Image 1 (cartoon, chains in turn cyan, purple):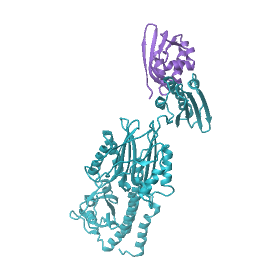
Image 2: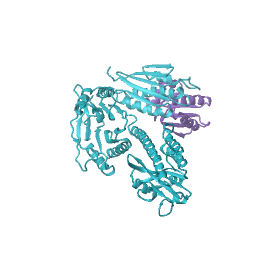
Image 3: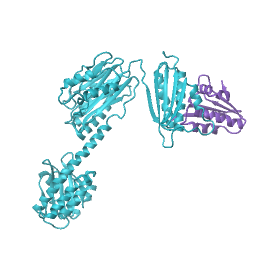
Length: 530
Length: 105
């Protein structure tokens, strides 16, 4: 078939058209099927198939076919160098088979389907083979060099389309994966304030952080950076995160935990490298144990003092060298003390040295509220310039002993939430000077307010009930709110809840608004100093 | 899930119903059914022992008010055991139940 006759050129354009934006929403497999239909028409053949090299680069996997659907259904895999397709991929050159038989074709599906003649060309991207495109006929046909040239031109376009589409898909997957591996919410811990910032960049790196408590009550804090970008880095990061959690559960100081993780990386993720900072906070948040595997030292700020980098030995990153001795450093954290953990994207900027970045970070950190410190740090170090690399920042502040943090609860407005709310209210109040009677009264008053929300605020679709408690010595202030509208109680023997609420507190206000209802409860604690 | 246990025993003149655990909106209907099922129409006196009730709110209170109303119709006496310092004693005081139903001890 002459390559340059007008009809062929027209058909080639149709192949090109497939790769344009109109089909941009198709998955790689569907895009290929669309292309293969046009290839069949262009060359007047019965079968067409694309096989792509798998991750290992050693096996071709049937990815899309026309006329040979069994290959997909049966998950056909062809070893590199073996058979018809294997030879094309190994040699990177076209192969023509005039007569299919046992000696020339390994794949029984081709023989069973009655394919008589075959032509195959490599899919090349940047000079490297990424797969094979082959076409076949059910009658005898002599494919010639011109057919091969035409198919190769098609193959080049397919390779380009597959590569760019695969790249997009991979980036989307990496981004979703990376997000899913970060804690969705930070744990609420009495006595500790937490704030996190995370800014991924275009390429999707391997930065992550993690926060979790152990059954012993110790809080584990992790921040790390897997070297590399894209899906592979995100996958390795996911594995490190799970493994670190498991090793932390086994116990031991941070150096021991990182040593176990290092051994795991060396054995199961050869070639991967990651920096990790792992810290354990005792249950009262008075003391921090920390070990660094090639990661930047955290910044600390104690009340009334300028912030500094924690002085700790930085051991080599994970995945570098087996059997290293790792170190744990102990940091005593005073009440009101704040610590920042971060990845290098925060301090490394083009046109600024690392030391300048670190100095600026120390100047920005104070022993203030964790969230506002995080905001200040991001503003001073990132500003309006998009960062060159992923940025993760985790800020922890031990509350001064006299402070009791507000309690914030958001739960479904359902009967089953009432018990949970009661428990949380009880726990929160036991950290204050409230007496047992005062705790019981407030549990009852808040319980009644929440029951009202459950019963009267929403239709069958339901909604949320929000409880917020703050200590304003000597008073406890509570708001219970919903975003529905209360209807009057129904049935007999109802409506005593309000009476109960009134008698269990010093002040009760119920405000029905367009956006929902808010119940304010104030109760003075007899033991609390004003 | 909020959990309450209802235990029933009879003596010659009375049905004794002991409720332990917690009562709120989540389980009030179940507790109500269990208590009402325990009383047959031959009883002359119903004793509801709430000593071991750790939490109760107005949904539990409602059960007691309804029970009191029904027992009055059936001409049965009702007594609620609510020791001083128990959650139900406090709730009875703030809700006016104590003026309606005999509380003991």
